[in-house]
Length: 143
Ligand code: 5GP
Ligand code: ZN
Image (cartoon, rainbow, N blue to C red; front, side, top):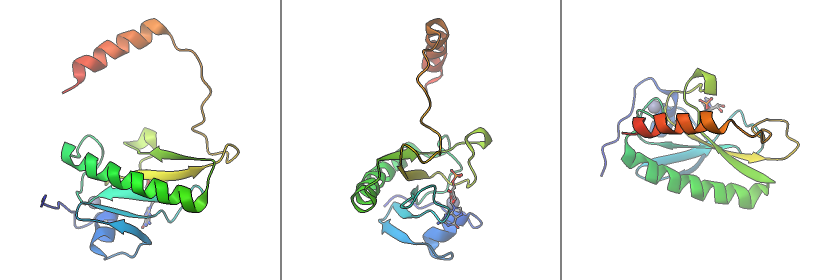
């Protein structure tokens, strides 16, 4: 089995270890899913790998497959129970993205067109030259 890599002080690692209670939805060897206690809408859930890494950049590749499998299972179950108009998967890295817990996590968020929570940004045609230039820089930065 992959070595778990947890942190003493991290609130999500404490939830994985059962030191802090949570409304657990699902657990397997590599992942853990639970209800968010500050839900954006009813049914808001979180899925985490049992590997402590601050953000997406620090999380090793092998954790994404298991984590996304659990995200799919949880999103399907939330969708069945809550029957929202839609579900957003969200993941925050850094202050500009409003990350507040520094253990990589995926939000599973039931959404409604009129919930006023944003993220339904308007389509505004971009500058094709600028998009193309950025694409080249990003391609060159892929490791
Ligand atoms: P972030 O802002 O980092 O993307 O999301 C962190 C999420 O963790 C927030 O939505 C917040 O409500 C949730 N959260 C923070 N502390 C706890 C906790 O102790 N238990 C649970 N279940 N969720 C938490
Ligand atoms: Zn952690």
